[in-house]
Image (cartoon, rainbow, N blue to C red; front, side, top):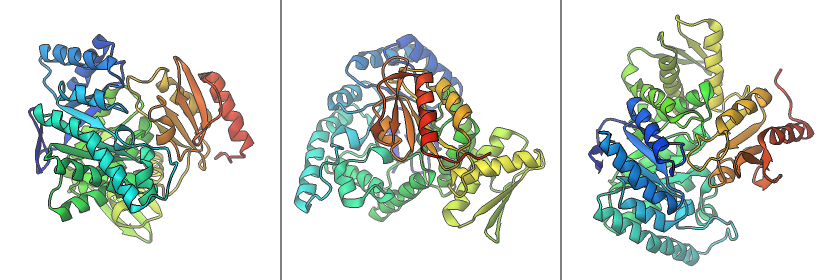
Length: 449
């Protein structure tokens, strides 16, 4: 199905749309406008802005006016959590609204995991009723809606029926398709995101197949959420997003890096270009070892395209080792790239798995600086997973499978978690990292020397 988001076409053969999200405080209108303009200059075709409360709604309108006055016509997307009235207000202002079914109209308290069929149906009907006003406003204003299902924030109803699985993610999205279609609303985009590349890819492929069987395939937004930063974040994004694009799945993409959002866009565009490199990439599988040769002199393009084809091979074949060749780079650099890709596929872990969100206007501490400190101090534990999250909205849920986590709290302070358990009050970052170091020592995590 092809839909329209402002003047932009998406789906059904339209080119892949590259988008990103601001990380300024939305009420800092000047900073948000300036950052959005840098994103567009970098090639961003759709700009998402967080709107956590009604306070930011009026700022959103002013941001749109200023961007349009500057000749910036790209569609704007409001990212909304928790409050239906905020989503409804935004739907009258911007071209697209993103909501999460796990925290918009349904509870996630896991108080009951044995719902009867009647209780399940009643819960689903309650969600549908609560969604109707938003769908009606979207229809009146030709506003698109993205249903953003995140692995870490599935509601208790879905988990009670399907577990915390890729199938649960696909079924959550399918429920919303039914809700929207029953209301006669079709201007819909869906995303199934996880920090685990395998979970994200499996869930997305599952939903894509379900929609094809139903004969109505809505556009899909692809992204590996909380991918991290630097080479690790880029490779992880390429392995997940590029693999699906090579299977002709996906209509819009966002690379989520804990960096300035304008940094995300060029690499996302390189991933989108991977489908045009098929004649230059040679892939062979022998004795459980994948061999990939791609003679590309540009390092970023090499990483984006090679990662995409490695991820695609991982979707369709089992392999336990990887050899990358590129005559423009040394054997050590090729080996390093192979290690990154194997880690992204979760085939071989050679370093700490660090999950970090790209931050947004809700973040109240220096997450980029903190991430670098975490990497410097704790990168050498291949059996350890650490989350570095911007705020309480997504933090504890999205890093639930991490061993430990740092989550933003009040201004310039963070809270240390062990899985879902809060261990500290808000602390200065350095104090929190010292506490985390002691936790790692106490839990006897072995270091990769």
